[in-house]
Amino acid sequence: MTARRRWLAEHWIAIASPIALLLVWEWASATGLLRAVFFPRPSTIAVHLRDLALDGILWDHLAITLTRIGWAFTLAAVLGVGIGLAMGLWRRLREGLDPVFAVIYPIPSVLFLPLVSFLVPPGEIALIVTTAVTSFFLIAFTTTHGVRQIDRRVVEAALHYGARGRRLFAAVLLPGALPFIFTGLRLGLGFSLIVVVAVEIVSASRGLGALLWMSWQILKVEDMYATFFVIALLGALLSYGLAALRARLLPWVPDIGDR
Amino acid sequence: MAVAVPAAMLIAWELCARLAIVSPRYFPPPTIVAWTLVDRLIAGDLGGDLLITLTRLAFAFALAAVPAVPLGLLMGMARPVRDLVEPYIAFILPVPKIALLPFLLIILGVGEPAFVVTGASSAFFQIVISTLAGVQTMDPRLIEVGRNYGAHGARLFRKVILPAALPAIFTGLRLGLGLSLVTLVAVEFVAAKSGLGHLVYRHWQMLSTPEMYAAFALVGALGLGLTRGLRALQARVLSWQEEIEL
Image (tube, helix red, strand yellow):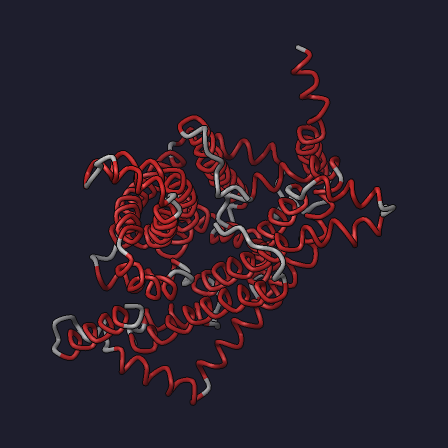
């Protein structure tokens, strides 16, 4: 009880300020101080959110976006970890691919959509591959770094005790690189949400990004806010949920991605 | 290897396109793309769009950095400010910033301000977070030593806190600049009628692929140049501090 009370005493501002903001917002747009066309009342937005949820529209779009994220993330993770491990282990491969990656990585992923749509059938697959691009690079980078930062002495000790091939990999290299791989996966998952929304805004007719963009085009401002809220919630869930998961699974290492 | 692999990839692409193993309509040979790039730069229209993107980037970056650094410092030094602001930062941070574009288009109207503010928003949050981390992770002994030597208030801030947080601030600015370029180009791709992002979109729609790849390459070069340049600058200016790389 006292612990909870102390927690409240320390954090009351962080809880009170959003509530106060919502109340002020509600009051300001109800009295016309804020133009309700641009800033609809939070209670109205909540009603619209409920309607979207009850209609099932929201769930359809959410399910499509989640499916895309799922596929894109899987693609990026498998290729990224695989190539990242290979680049960490073989210097020549790393030296060859580094300059290529360095040029491609800073290009915004939405721009890959045209290129990807030439390479694979346009439509769903092109959307997924485009979404995977940036996550792939992030995961490959962190994995490479994870392998390289393993203490040489640990590897040598393992070699002296006769660990070779698969055993060396499973007992030394993978666990040593795991914290970095996990950080890469977490960042990659966050990025795949960012990119999927952008790609959906550009070219999809379904998904949360598309719902947001269409709501703007037909000026359904309340639906816009409601969709934004769902996207933000999804983002928070992905990034903080995964950070919590890491704390459980790999409690002995600090998250290098925490800035 | 660092030269051989990229060169081999380009040559393979060139050969495949020339021998029509891949469709040259979709994948024009790199030499043609390079010629188009030079041609368009001389003609001036590619340079014009590059300049537009750079101008937007400069405004967006200034708009983000000027309020973000003081806010981050203030959050790091004053607990109530941090408690007050942190929930909003935490809420907006993982959101794709391009999702803010429709709101800004409604509030500011369709036009430059909305594009620039969207670009600024992605840098703003990154810079606040990095600056805050810079203040929070500084060695508390430094402050104690400063106090013992009689530094208080503004002096303590100027002589101790700011120098200690500077590397993190710089990292935040560098990451923020990169993020705002990414967001801006995406915004141009979606909504603007000029700039490199729009150029890629337009030439994609018209299927004039050499121009598309030329604009694409220019965006890549711009991103690479900015990140590398700033990193080199950081190493020079803040040579006494080592940066913690991601």
